[in-house]
Amino acid sequence: MGLGHSISNTAITLITGLASSISWGGPPFVTYGFIMMAIVATFVAISLGELASTMPHSGGQYFWVATLAPPKYRRFLSYITGILGWAGAVCTSASCCLAVPLMVFSIITLRNPEFDMDPWMVFLSYQVINLVAFFFNLFERGLPWISKSLLVYTITSLVVILVSILAASPNKQSAENVFFALNGPNWAFSCLDAVTHLADEIPNPRVNIPKALLVTMALGSFTGLTVLALFFYATDLKSVFTSGTPSLQIFSNAFSGNTAAAIALQTLVAYSVAGAMVGVHTWQIRMAWAFSKDKGFPFHSRMSRLAPEPFGTPIWAHIWSCGWTAVLGFLYLGSQTAFNSLISAGILLQYLTYSASILCLLSYGGSNIRHGPFWFPSLGFVANIITVSWTFISLVFYSFPIYLPVLAEQMNYVSCVIVGVFLYAVGYWVLFGRNELEVPKAQGYE
Image 1 (cartoon, rainbow, N blue to C red):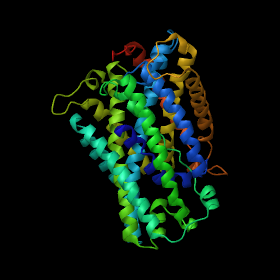
Image 2: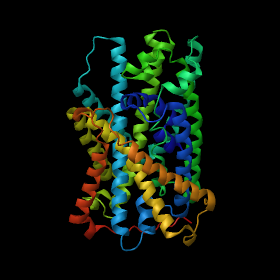
Image 3: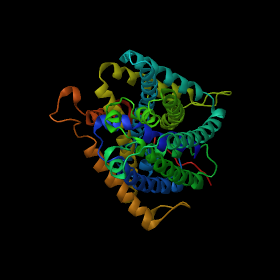
Image 4: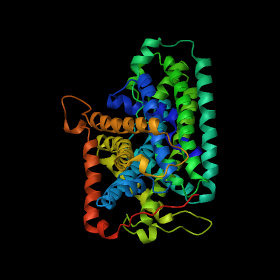
């Protein structure tokens, strides 16, 4: 649960996601959008929980596809699912690496309006955050303690932020402005599959993985709803919309321009996002490691190894995933619009792998497999249909242009990113994967 919540980090994601939501134009308004996404994500958690309870495996989605897809296509479909899932995790990692330096430089700008932020500054800070998260994931023994500490820290920070805002600001927005002014909890319930990839490390995963998924959803929904109270104190909406970091502007407005108080609260948020980066690294490493054990990646003979103590982690898979996160940072130097499209592709790639697993389950027939302890015939079917439907809806709407008329420098390139990942996967499959990939075997967790 600690890892799942630290990665999804719903409330903090809702706060930090204001910047991207405003720049993108965001499809749903934040309040109704958050409620809608909470409902959709609950059904996603039920669907993933059923699959994890029935077939727990560190490979997650690509293993489920390999087990349930038609025999003729299962190796290819499993490979594509594995690549898409890992690519989604790397894109998410890139988004966290970018969010922290943008917050830091916004704080510097608030204190010193003369400061001019250059892209190279963000790039170097991006790489530093990536390296820090890399270091924390070198040692297996410390990860449970880190995830539990981040859970406590995030909840404590939210309490501090809410109490401070409520006590400091005598003015607030009308309910109408709150419900129709701020948009976009797009990432508030992302990365739900992260805990399913820890099947090797969680006791009794058939029971505890579904529990972790549902507790993550319940805690995220509760903390996310409390964060919406902050928007009642966004009294100067124009300054919020034009701010590079809207949450910092909300804090500043609430404290009547007291920069020290605003910076203190924004620092709490920045530390929480940096902590989430550690969990995201854990997630992407486990995916790369599991896939490498089935020879899905280049250099799989090294990437499938666990390093000896005191590490106890798949260091080569770690280097591979973090290396790709570092490479994506160079895209920010070339085109910030293209980089934002890359980040947005992360959640779509996640949902594509969820739907691939679910469609294979529906095709195979839920009645034809041995059910785990977490299984709801009617509710599970509804959850499956809603998850697949939302995947196709989001795939269409999140690919729309950001602005009209469409200009090359303002284009939404998310569809290009997804196609690019597909082309890489198919190309590697033709050259190497079809001869090397092994169908993953079930793991016993009785």
